[in-house]
Amino acid sequence: MQGFIAVYLREMRILKRRFWRQLAGMAVSPLLYLIALGYAMGGAARFDGRSYLEFLIPGLIAMSSMTQSFGIATDINVARFYWYIFEEFQAAPIGNVAYVAGEVLAGMTRALMAIAVILVLSLLFGVRLHYGPWLWLAALLNSFAFAALAVALAMLVKSHADQSMLTSFVITPMAFLGGTFFPVERLPQWAQKMLAVLPLTHASEAIRGAAFGETPGVWPYLILVAVGVAFFVLALGTVNQARD
Image (tube, rainbow, N blue to C red; front, side, top):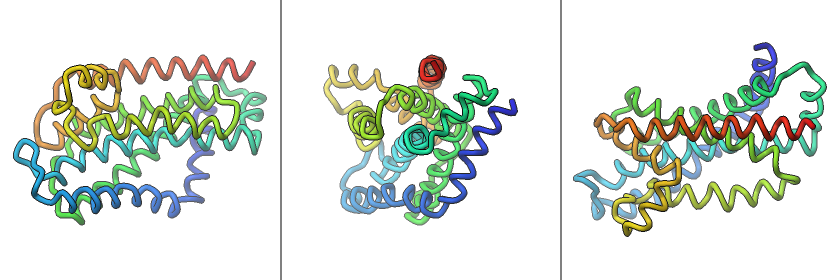
């Protein structure tokens, strides 16, 4: 337990030093999307009787919770390749579970900050949605899954450049194709089946349903739990391999 807290507090101290820069970075992309897409589309595009801005906000919550939680991988790699912090963790009496759990929780904390920024922006843009427990549960499960994936992949890459390549090939396509900017149901059937494999698709579905005041189905949550547990186990394996 002490090892878990030590790992988490280390990441929080780094986040505290970069707090305002991090907060500004979390606000830039959603703000640009809201201005460029929300206002540009105006009232021309409506989905199920709702404006595009109302459709876009839940998608941005899903996307930001993914990208910000996955962003912990960059900090891990900087610590590994430049500060050699991982070697200190190897020497310390900190188990794999404690290390992975601490890094995952740090990624989830970053994701919650990003969600808070989007909620503030939504109020500034006059968008009023339902932000109940089902929305937060889906966002937390989504953050957990991608933070665990971030730890797993951070242990596999051999350089900081490799991490950027993974982000470009894994996270960026998912951000645009996971039901964030357009309804997946409007795509051809074969494309829907392909995108159903992406965890972000299910996170977007659950978050959007909850934001619209509906009770989301149980399947998106079960899928996110299963994916998150699988990624967490994968992270334990890759951390163990990196220690060896």
